[in-house]
Length: 95
Length: 176
Image (cartoon, rainbow over all chains, first blue to last red; front, side, top):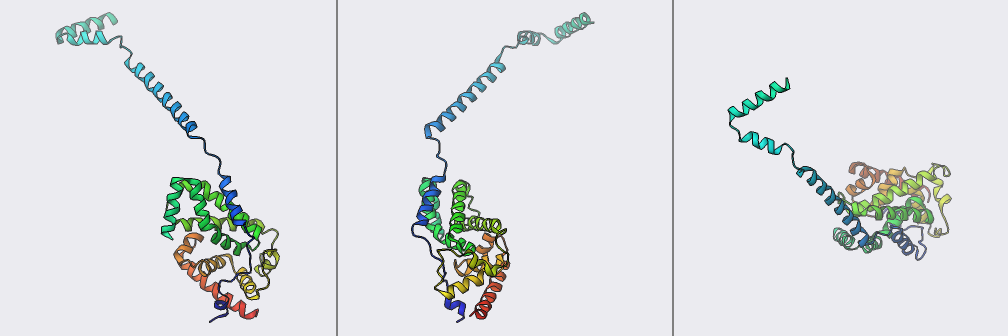
């Protein structure tokens, strides 16, 4: 057996009584307090309302009536000869 | 150890502060001794360990299980101890032989001459050898785990441990 093996794991250090327990308390107290649940819900609720408002405004802008919709529908209802006649008239007027 | 870590992680999921308390009950003491062997002085070791556990507490939510919980805890504590040593360099000579006398405090027991001699021998070693030796000799870790904690390869951990052990035996013989 070597001298090292005889010494084994002995250490010349001592640990002041209660120091690890006190350290544990300090570590646990170091964590910033979490916001209460209702406060976190309030944030999510606000985000939800904002998302809904955005979706609604997008829906409004997409569903605004197209002023040319009736005109296009009427044009599509014509047969091809009438459509060409109308386009020719339109071109002539534009030139 | 795996089962114990699972219990801690389960407790952390249910209630973070209770889980953290369980983690500290399990690891604070072995980690303290690991750091104390590197820093010698009680107050320095206590500060480094406290800082390490505060870091752990802040980061525990992001623990990804890429290593064992114990490995992760030891790695953070080791880094904190090394940070403390780097900040001390200006006031302490790099020659390790006098570090024990310089850093020994009220919480050092000079009565056990063999134990003092062993710590002096360890502190005279290069840092990597100290880490490899301490983690293997005192914490009984395998080389893979030592490698994950220290950032060296398992082969390097093994080599460093054996170099360290030979030098310690030699030191003890010469300083009998």
